[in-house]
Length: 577
Ligand SMILES: Cc1cc2nc3c(=O)[nH]c(=O)nc-3n(C[C@H](O)[C@H](O)[C@H](O)COP(=O)(O)OP(=O)(O)OC[C@H]3O[C@@H](n4cnc5c(N)ncnc54)[C@H](O)[C@@H]3O)c2cc1C
Image (cartoon, rainbow, N blue to C red):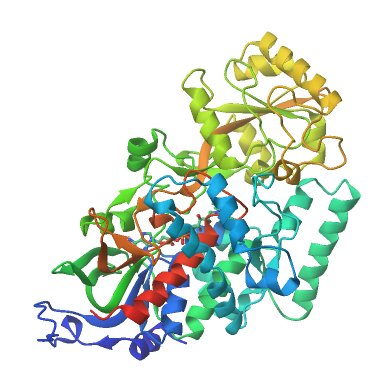
């Protein structure tokens, strides 16, 4: 359906653009409006599209606006897994879980780090997991479950396995030309799912990896024979959400950032959207939902709040502008000092950007060192805690960058995500350094050779025993998930076969997790803790319900979807502005 006809169908054009002054004496708002809609949703990631779908499902007229020329945000680039404990798919499959257990787990790992992660918000999240699943299923979307993926602290009370869902490989042909308006050149164009990804990481030189590769190839071929172009992970999630948005007839404007909220007597009654360079005043009768991502790619804010330039794998539109729009309207912010930390390599020539590393540090035959050549961390820790420890250590001993040192077997056996950039380019840029011996490698990366050799010797002793006496690597099921089960300890293996490599690692992230403070209905709160009528937010625009940690696979997308749906429905049902 053409964009023009969508606009006409779903919006009442009634103002400046048409030359007619909008007025409504009952509301006593002396504004000139260009258009009127019920719910204005800013952003096109999981939170925003979730809100748009829920709003339209309640029969509200919805308009979606996206600041960049491509839709999907970081959600499109992501692994696409969402953590939804005790969800309807689990219930149907008879998987054992319960809200009480999940709450116990969240209390154990998230704790209460302020109002964003209050018990009420945790409960709202857990009680809200069914809606996105049931609603999307109603529109024909299918889910799969990553059955063997453990919670990141599954050994703690309430911890479990298989709580994350993802969208079944999705046929992007359903989106027609609209798919071209994504960052499709930045993703792996295959119908992969999370468990495939972990298995393939171990390389196709082992029988299980080979079998998995054949299964993915079979799935791809089967899709092609049926005339479909199947994609998995974040692409499947974004595409499925956008497919439903379009099915509902909701217009989506690209190149159209929300720049200002219009507040009348404390109530958000509209917003200014800069549509392709021209300001459009949008009257909203039920609310505005900000699903504009975080500020991972805003170098100034990163310096101010985190003291680093970013090295983030988040999408370019993650610039904090939506958070600023909320702040300008009187919203409170929280947790601005936090990010969804994750190891990255610096993107060539752009320090705000990074390429995510997932398993390079946790597979056998690897050890990570600081700039003194010493090991200082359990390399296989869940990524948020891992980055926090790196940043803490950096206060005493420089470790930005750190080096992941590997031996020849690591390079030969396992898939190195960094090499998707191109191994020669990485070598030229000094991101990967290679040398025949550890001594020579140490000289090349400028760390004391004796220290590196001693570090590796001690680590090799642990690898032979299968027990890491210094940092307990490989003792948590999450760590083993990204390890090699053919070893006695899936995360430990000696470094003894040259050539050796050092991979430069930065304390990057997959987005930020501080932002607007919201309540259990996704309503944005003001500085006195009161909801700002007519204003909702979700996803990385908000301070996360997950506090400082990352409880399980999909801990950003799970709440983004859930609070998107909660906010969209609440606005549509209760907003009357
Ligand atoms: C490689 C990678 C893998 C990941 N894997 C996972 C995973 O498997 N599970 C998980 O839970 N998380 C994962 N994440 C993190 C996850 O992708 C993000 O946390 C999540 O997508 C954020 O969703 P969102 O809806 O808040 O924002 P986004 O998806 O970033 O969407 C926000 C959108 O708003 C737009 N926008 C910004 N400002 C404005 C404005 N002023 N007006 C209008 N639009 C605006 C942006 O351009 C963007 O399109 C991963 C991230 C990366 C980089």
